[in-house]
Amino acid sequence: MTDTEDRIAGVLLAAGGGRRLGGRPKALLEHRGRPLIEHALGVLRAAGCARVHVVLGARADAVRERAELPGCVLVENPEWERGMGTSLRAGLASLAGTPARAALVSLVDQPGIGPEAVARVLAAYEDEHSLVSAAYAGVRGHPVLFGAAHWAGITEAATGDQGARGYLREHAAEIRLVECGDVAQAYDIDTEADLVHLE
Image (cartoon, rainbow, N blue to C red; front, side, top):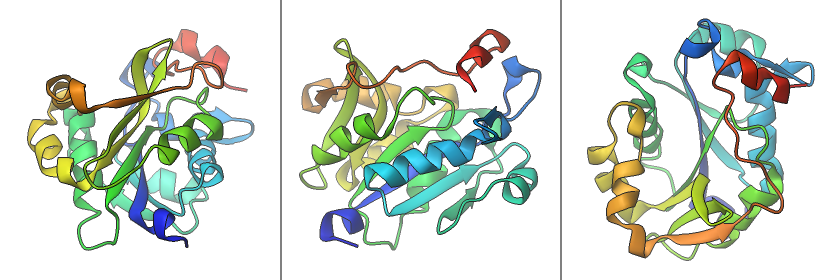
């Protein structure tokens, strides 16, 4: 593990219950013959994230049973039904005591974002004060890199489905936007209609 790889941990948020998908957990949706969570993990690995913490919630036991997630730290979020903010908090809390000085946060339900986009965001890391976000045609999206200096503030602000949105709004002037629209598509798999994006 290089020094930079050691300093940045991937945090994959995969706890959602797929409320608008008839209660099918997004982590277990099939993509290219395997659970979607495996694809999302593969993207992080291919981009250079050696350390990955995966936040599970809905049907966590089934995800552990069906998905191959070798070498990951699996973090269970018992409060997942209260929204993505709880998963973000759980993911950041799990980094305590590790050498990580930044967290690269990605979402399980964005298969249009591949290793190229993630690698660009990783490459923009400078130190624990870094605040970096992928952008699509200039609009902020995922993944987002949070230096450790921001973790306490994000943890305090992350509520419901907002995640870090409020914190990022307040710190907009500090965010380094990295354009990724030429190599990725930032759609979410939220509804039945979105399933067309899965193969």
